Image 1 (cartoon, rainbow over the protein chains, first blue to last red):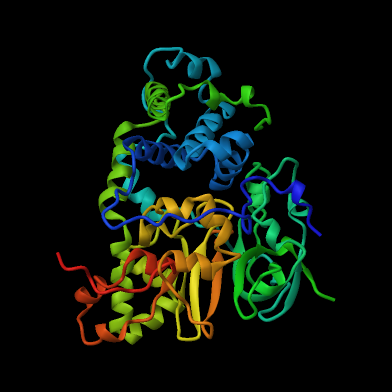
Image 2 (image 1 turned 90 degrees about the vertical axis):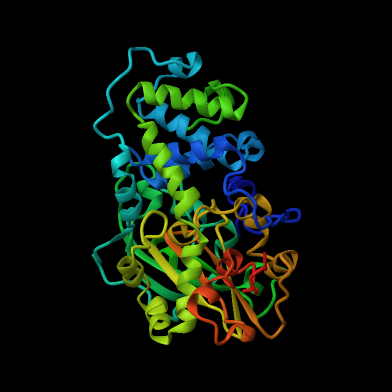
Length: 230
Length: 207
């Protein structure tokens, strides 16, 4: 059984929640002008190559619970980006407090993304797939059991992409996607450790007390999230 | 490493008002040569004016019109998107899931807000909301009803939780009334929500 007390606040699949407010045709893509600045800074900051998307996600979900729950979406991005720039030594806490850099204006850093490279960077993206190192352990159609999220972490506190609602459940391998970078390791600079990645299908009736027979939920799982069903 | 105590987080040292917070951080990053403000402008321009759901709608309309293209889009998605120049950031590994009379597909990211950016643009606020992330996996039929979509009991629902770098794009069923239209007219029937699974294709609103 999973322990709900251990469930981190970002892992919210299945939680009770209120109504959803769909947007309306004509609504702006960015509700406030500062939202787009945060998006641009986050994408440009990530393009420096000093951290991966896994690290960014880990820092967003590691925000204090009160901030995670009260911040709007782009406030979370901004807070995690600020903390990352400080943690990686690019910016000091004093500079954040003073709102000013400690020295004179610097030329553009070698790793910084210049405007001429933006289109190529966005078009290239960053593939998570890696060459196949080993044959996948599981075959399409095979039944598997998921681990507990904490058991998949490489350090504590740590990062995993196995949601609690899909922990310790029996599912069926739907697709094999080849080897992909393992976020549990890569988020913490412990190496990419590529593993076979599968789409695993779970019956809604197995996941939820009120789940409907016939409906399914598919979760992408790395091989180390799964055990063969004996 | 991130800490539990609010006081120890650098972000809490920024000004209280979000717009000022962003400005403060950007000022420091630009002065230190870590960010080229023109690069930030160029990124915003792409997501505000160029990369959006019209790209996905064009693909769906072409798939409806051309069975050979549809087969490519479903079976060789990465290859065809790369050939067309629609791959890239947050859409490096796209899987197309097809709606049928037996099965309706719905996409969510319960852990954060993963979304196929190169074909749909940046996600709308509701997609990133706690309510959608919490409820889509557990009560998809009620969630869809809140979007005005009623799924008949005999049609099963597949909810795709985007936990890895695979991004899911829904290929909706073509409405009967749209048969015979050309590709550019069909594209107007394909709204963004239809490609997430929270909507169905609709006739374009006459303006």
